[in-house]
Length: 305
Image (cartoon, rainbow, N blue to C red; front, side):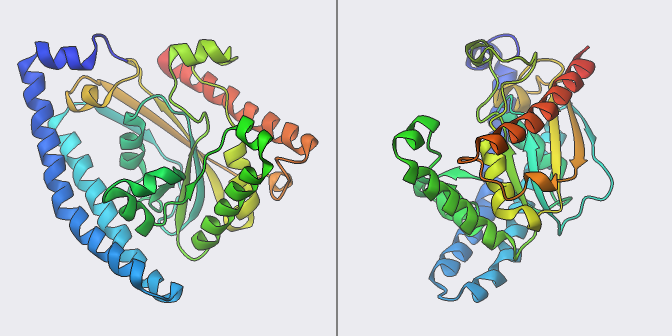
């Protein structure tokens, strides 16, 4: 996080407070334009009895979401001087099928990823906790946009009740079956949580800039959808001035954001294995993931100096 707690900074700096209020109001106005028609279409989609007919709603719903993202991004560009340096590989397609993996440092990451990929690859879809389905308005919108909901059970919970792990795997399979019919970018923050100094110390992470990767989510997607994915889109997000908050971003306190994207082939030997039940496969999968994370850590060191 940048120097000074964001809320204290808002109190001390009236101009910063004014800038934040203006941008938040504009984002709210943008949401009022885009969200009601999205929710209305979502309600109609929910009562349509045929899956085949529901698919006709997908392009319109996705278009509304992409338009909402584009306007928000334009406002960030207009009201801040943040330099976004985004390195994209050639060959990414709007109608592709990708697994997107990224490190996770801040809530700002989501805004950065949307700016980097909006209308360049399919809409990013995150695996969400099942409880988020009940968030007013947004839960219905996420469902209509085919965001998959799952239990997100801990390893300890699954150890006590293996059936929970099987339920999450079945949820993943059903979500990925829907994705076979539409262009998709399945998003996974592999660390499972945002990077902080306290979490880094608690984990005794071997990486300088990253938490340990959690491979299970990636393994689930590759198991359920491996042959239907074209490649892995590996994203490294770096804030050379320090990890920012959302208030830092909209308050014009983030001087630079670097995004480096690498397109990776999917190793055939890692598709279709039993991550939960096959220890040898799990070790091999984790070794592959650790290699990627070591490369990412070196990449961040080179950028930050």
